[in-house]
Amino acid sequence: MATLRPSDPLIPTPEVATMAEAALYSLGQFLDNPPDKITLAIIEPPLANAEITLSGDMFRLVTEVLKTISKGHPVTILPLQAELSTQEAADILNVSRPYLVKLLDSGTIPSRKVGVYRRVLASDVLQYKQQNEAARHQALDELTKQAQELDMGY
Image (cartoon, rainbow, N blue to C red; front, side, top):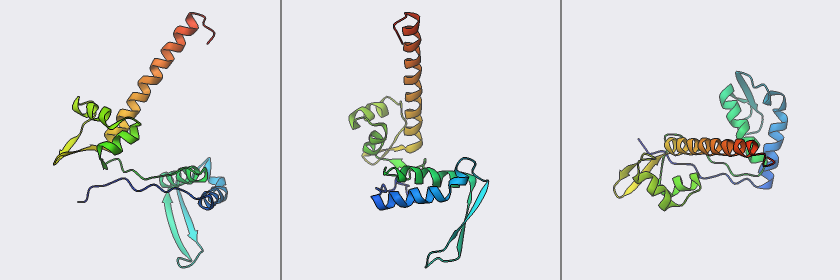
């Protein structure tokens, strides 16, 4: 079985962003209350008269991708079971590679060695990121509470 890798990002051109915005407009009635299942018809050749059926979850994922692209932001697909290099993991966390290596050495984020290289599961990187953000928000909430108790104008 091949090792899953992140896909190269789609960097939308202004034309692609406009197309994504038009697609969202066409799907507008379904965006706030997506159906359990939706079937889309393709009318452009060479796939004319083809239909694609999406589950509600897949439809929500597609619309989130369209929303991001319509704003001109790049998008990539990252399977949770993908194995990342240390640089890819560091980029996701927005930290330096040496800092990430310290997290791996301490066991804070699990990793495995492939030859001389380390591999990190995307799910482990994203879990660490989520935990780190939750701890940061909790600390900010505590600081805000203390500032209010001390009547510091917050």
